[in-house]
Each structure stands twice: as C-alpha cells, then as structure tokens.
Amino acid sequence: MAKNTYEDIFKEIWSKRLNKIFLFVFLAVLSFLLILIFRGPAKLPVVETIRPDQIKIQKGEKIVIVSEDGSVEYMTPDGVYYDKWDSTRVSIFFKEIRDLAKNNLGKLPPKDGVEGYWITLYLDGKLVKVFVEGTDETIDEVFQELDELVEDSQEEVSLTEIFSGATPTPPPTPTHAAPLFPTPTPILSGFIGGKNVEEDCKLWLEQGLGGTVISNTVCIPNLSPTTTP
Image (cartoon, rainbow, N blue to C red; front, side):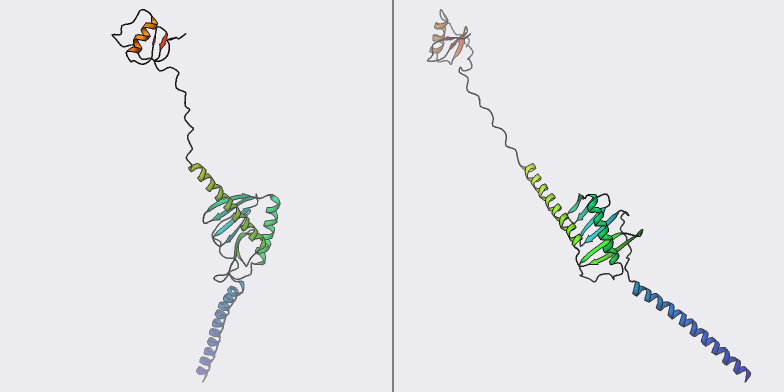
C-alpha cells in the first residue's frame, strides 16, 4: 500500500508540474500574439534612408522629399524635378507633417486599394514610416503645386526643342549691279591698228569684236570712244 501511495503522490506532483509547464508556454505564446495584435505594424521596417532633417511623402508613384534647408526633390515616373521653399514655409510644413504622422502611428496598415500617403520621417530620433489614409489639404497642395512645376518644365523643354530644331533661313545674297562697262576683251594677236586711238576703236569694232580698252580708251559698240582716267 505504501508503494502505491508513493507512486500516486509522484504522479500527482509530476502531473501538476507538467500542467504548469504547459500553462506557462501557453501564456507566453498568447502574450506574444496579443502584443502583435494590439501593437500592430504601426512602425514598418524602413528600408529607404533619409536624413534626420528630411521628410519623405509618397503618393502612388510620386515622391516628395523636403529638407529643412528648403530644397525640395520631386520624383515622378517622367523624371526628377527640384524646387526651393522659404524658411517660413518649411517650418510650418515640418510641424504639420510631424503632427500628422504622430496621430497615425497606432493605425494598422492600409488594405489593398485604399488611397492615402506614406510618410517617412524621424520622430524622437527614430526613423519611422506611417500611412495616412484619405486626403490631407497640406499634402495635396504640395503635390498639386509640384505637378504644375513639372508641366511648366515640360512646356519649356518642348519650346526649346521646337526652336532648336528649326532650320535658319539663310540671308539673301546681295546682288550687285552689273558693271557699266564689260570686262575688256584682250586684244587678239594679229590686230592691225590705225593711225590714232579712234581709228583703232573703229577698226576693232568693225571686226565684230566686243568692247575693249585701247590706250586708256574704252571702245564699246554703238558708243563713242571714251577715255578712262
């Protein structure tokens, strides 16, 4: 009877110990699951890197990165564009976006098809990424303004291409009046002159030759001989 009593007591103790182990494991797993459920992926792992003085906002395929020095980088599927803000606007923008991000830290990630913005920034020294569902007036204004900047830049490029591709019209070639006297025809070999210049001109023209100059005298058909200076 004593042996059976000891065995029963041992079994009872071991059974209670196993129950405690299983209970501990169950509570640990349950606690871990509850932490994941209630905490949620409010702070998603951030793979992209920005500086602590920058805020990144993504809307669809468009991304805006604003720096505290006022420089703005706007990335679109068509290219990258840049802008510059004054210090007052930058200060207001950073305050509003940080407040907006803090108010959305505890929210679950969006479902497929939900519209909104992904905001990446530093909060309390840590890089976080949160989703803001719906629309925000400040962010919409920034994207609209930058869309207009892109349109203006594309129009300027188009005009530049049009003018650079045009073929310039060459200036008209200046026309010069024909000289009063034709180029003198050289005296042919074998020409026999007269007694004076006038007779020489007469003989030259009678042979049907063109105008010429003989002894500084211009001989032209149907014109009297003229002495050139």
